Image (cartoon, rainbow, N blue to C red):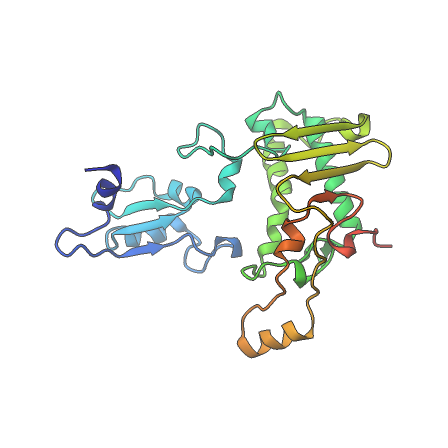
Length: 275
């Protein structure tokens, strides 16, 4: 018996080969779901009833005392697996660690505290000066609310993904004192550079004069790529009629450009600072 069949036996009832599996991991981007505020308590009420339970790695830790006679578990994995270290039970094999702040945990010798915090300071300053923050939170768009840049599945809380760097910073500050670190200049502030990655086909180049940084993706077609299709009246009417998102398809404009440059942002609203 191969591993897959052996694993299926954990979920299928032998008497009828049926299975009841509950997905408790869906919709986590929207925040804590009603009834699951205390996930450990809520899940234990189901473990003896259902055959399987789908949960996130964080939820899994809340039910680590599950017995073999209770529901079997499936762990939902997604792109956030990129942030996990090589010692994780399902290590990433085709991704590269790029967030500078997480390097303080994954590879502290590669990026100093001061350089990581300088990168975060500049990033947040640029977007905050261009309208990315409003009414006490981040907006639904790059630099101000712009539904043309949202994917159809994006919900009201999807913009909170933008807080990831701050969340990491606050968490690591307790152990490493990141916020008090003396800021150090970034490579583009020290001089020109050009770095190519053969596995990804990406080239990143920095110019000290003007602080320009450009990312070139070899696999994407030549040219500037299509412009963003604006979210207009037609989309609004369709949403009212269908009670579902009907945003313009801007996948190519957002992800299929040959060159991405800090001097030529994809979104028009990011080109100048808000007065």
